[in-house]
Image (tube, rainbow, N blue to C red; front, side, top):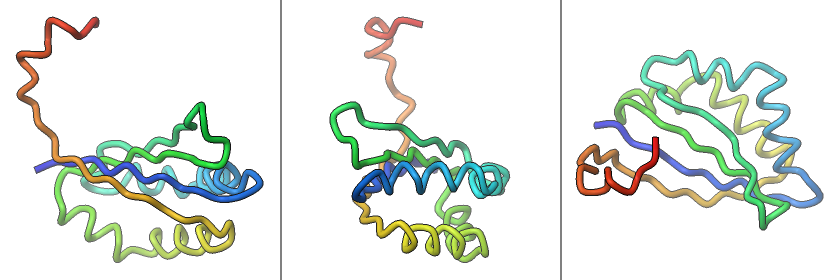
Length: 108
């Protein structure tokens, strides 16, 4: 069962944005996107909070995420999180494709 994790990285003095930029420029983001089971890995900036970066991270199943957590890539992420002294809030959502009642409200 696929799921999405929203990770809110919070720091000070622009550290969350610096973290995301280094994740991208160092190639770590591409490493994650190429992993078996990764469906999405994208950073976003909340308009009303300059010190937070939102990561939307989707996986095919828990086994894929568990493998990622045990990887060398995860060690690099932890190192960067510590470098930028970031704190996190996490929300996990299970995919529900049954939005048939909502279709009339969605503009495509």
